[in-house]
Length: 223
Ligand SMILES: Nc1ncnc2c1ncn2[C@@H]1O[C@H](COP(=O)(O)OP(=O)(O)O)[C@@H](O)[C@H]1O
Ligand SMILES: [Mg+2]
Image 1 (cartoon, rainbow, N blue to C red):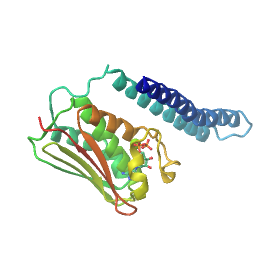
Image 2 (cartoon, protein in one colour):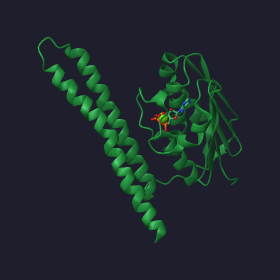
Image 3 (cartoon, protein in one colour):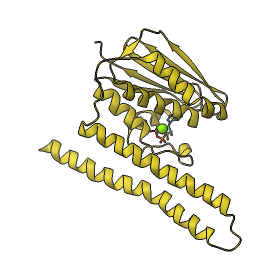
């Protein structure tokens, strides 16, 4: 009964938070459209900005849908094992362009035979979210290492990092550090990572500090 009530409160809070997060890009979009209607408006620039707001909303809706699929159990997380190295290489290749633009170097440190107890799609989601974060927040000149060994996936960068007291909060839904607020994002990425890892029986931990980068370690139970 207690559990049911706590869950209900979480759901209500979540709905309110999602609506709140959608209001900002919607308000910006409306303002951009109104400005575009004025004589002499720079329509190309305004359209580009409008597109960004739509992309922000799309990312939010996709993340919310994915989380709800995880929660409803419609998306199965753990089902057999997945070889890690090919997934790391795939994500590295897919995000190579944006990594280069951000001046973040991506290194891989994994033996070919390491497997983790996750479905391939789930492992991809975890790795992609973590790599995307380092590209967005680590800062130019940073190095990001994707490492895997038995039962462990470790994604670590040597970039800007966050304050130590923020580390435990990073996995909360919608938590974003003040510095990140100006950039695109939903605050749901690390919540998704944690949900996936915990659903596979594992645990996540964040370490690092200002100027010492951010390290995310995912530990899985032995098979
Ligand atoms: N590699 C990183 N370096 C510094 N800060 C990070 C890093 N990864 C995540 N963060 C911080 O954690 C916050 C939450 O990350 P996440 O849940 O993925 O949400 P989002 O990326 O949508 O903001 C980010 O907004 C940022 O403040
Ligand atoms: Mg993110």
